[in-house]
Image: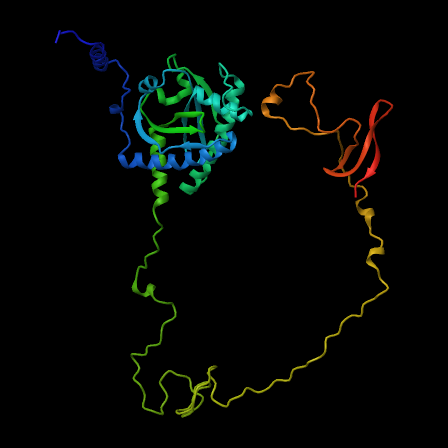
Length: 398
């Protein structure tokens, strides 16, 4: 050994000196009460389900296979976050306005946002711009709004209560610069929970995303999650009498069996020595309906008459009847003339400028469509009446 300290050892010593400084702001994981292992597992399960739903929504937006792996939950501080992200990244702030109090931050790498927004605008994910513009941030906000909206729906089903979020806001942040603490809230002052995901989008993106939860919000999610997992216990009867039917059963055990040929006490009788209706005498068979053998109920007089149909009037023709169409004569209908149609991608539409020519699918001189309330009813040709355009109907569509 030459007795000289390496740069890593010098940095470690300087770090210990800063930690011993009494004026330093406590900003380490040991200075706050962090989550237990059970709480971290629950947060990971919640995030896994929510991000799975968000991945399905992102697939529908970019038309590329989206894979988000099982999350890793840990704690961290703002200084540790700066060390992990050395280049500009995009902060997506999601605020809860119903069901849960607080907000969290979703961090995406700048290049990933460029790929996602290019795919959303109709590109192939390779036409990346040098810098993110307001248009790209607006597009990623819309994507996150739909993704986090579907996640909130999954979270509502999971917790058994309504969860609603505000529209997310996106901002390009360079963590090496001074951060406006009003935009990141308590994340810059105290430890928080980091949920790390690995994300793949087709062959274009193989990166990671990170979600930050304040400690209080993570504990609230854990509490609601555990409450929703507890099964509902059935009501326990307080006494033995509540366990039986309200109607008391006959006390058969307390009444002695009478001798043959004598009725039981407590049974209604038709007469002394005669059985009840429906009870056969000793030695007589029992019918399936409970009536004595050979017994037939008295017949009742039933008035039966043939059905009477109203004769058809062959002289009435409903087609020739006059309909009362006057009732709807004053109903206004919207008449639209359609010159033609075409389809454009979002990228092509954003490139429109004054003077841009849009080619339609209809050939010049071909009759144009006349629609009433969106339904094609006629075709015609354009005419000029004084200073206004008009349509001369040439064909009625049946």
